[in-house]
Length: 538
Length: 91
Image (tube, rainbow over all chains, first blue to last red; front, side, top):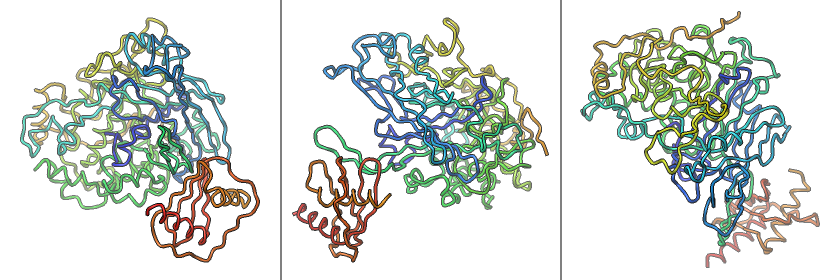
């Protein structure tokens, strides 16, 4: 997964487990950036009576580096407090919750938001109500209204939401962790089984989201407006952390006493780095390390284990990758420094030579409002990963293809990728313009962009959108359920020319497996000239 | 951390060790003391819970935590005393 239970230590600490980080220019408010950090992995929506929540004893932070040293220049802190209405019931609620002040809602959570810039700390909002979990039609009959009421304006003009959402990250966990299986290409795998469509393991689970939408100028060095893609000040580095106090005394009466300074136990910048790049013995240390110290992990990025496994797991499919022995400068650029100018025409998100696992967002790149590519930059859409990350970006496919060598020609002109490098996918999207992959029908067109959570009553395994899906921030009766840029759920245009297999059904999947044999795939560089609506200035 | 607050922590850790809410965590190890001397005086005490962490008693290093803060104090004699208490606790 992106970073769900990615390390032994944090896998036992769900409340502090940072699962995904997103950073993107808000498509409906392009003078702002939306920052999202998700926690509490794989929430079974029916998991009551003590439903999921943030940790009152966890310090959640979203950090922004705007000068390239991989150290926070702006930090948003989030602390939670939980209260009871009635200590004498075991119930989460004793009747329908029709508002955030409903007396029927027993266990409530509130968030306090603080902004830290240098030595200055400013409280932006105190004890702002979070929504309840989506329990079911009798307990939370109008969930979207509850969620909408939990969107708060902060004292500096930013907007915040903290609460449950539908998981937006899609991945075939069952396959990828079963010896690296990509179901559409099973016929080419060592297992030699029939190809099959991908299975979205996270389609019916929820997550806890902290989302904040801030003016771009709140994040840039000197408060400048990011107007030119080529300006260094246009790019920020973003990562999130969760910290716990150094000691916890278990008092023996059901209470704990936490004492000491905050110690980082989870952090996340780019998806999947700690998950599939960092060795298991170093994962917890990685979580405890600041990004500015990431040079110690750089060898795992430039010599990724997975690049060595692909040719073994898929014999004969990645012969060129198997022979490549040089450090992967392409992966170092994508994951550790940002992409320098001159590598991808008209684009850069380079933050300097300091190697650090951060999402890097060039805020001068405008949002793609028509047919965004879920493949982001390698899908010719410079508004998506690895230029920041949008909720619908297919980061698993992007990183799989990058590791398989699809992005290597960008920095090593002598390298010709294996045919399969530009085609492999878990098979959860029908094309690179499909932003509705299985569970992603829950996306919203407006803040906080991640959709109405699945209700406990309707799950497990029901991916039917909640009846009020899209009502958040929408006029009553109007449904708006997908991101700006209408989805293409069928066979969409392939602007990069690298998508040849449309992996929707078993038949198509079988075709994909055949394609991976190299007969018909076009072998074009993964990235040419992306659609940046702005030419660089010199 | 100012000297004033360091003294607060130290006094709490030494004088207030038997008070309610004080937790002392001392790993087992050598009890040999270093040369650092304690500097307890009459400065104010911390009223809340205090944790003293001695990762290696031989080093004389004591990390004292209260609230969301900590200080590292070097006191060979105190570290030795705490390790002696730890030895009692395990017997």
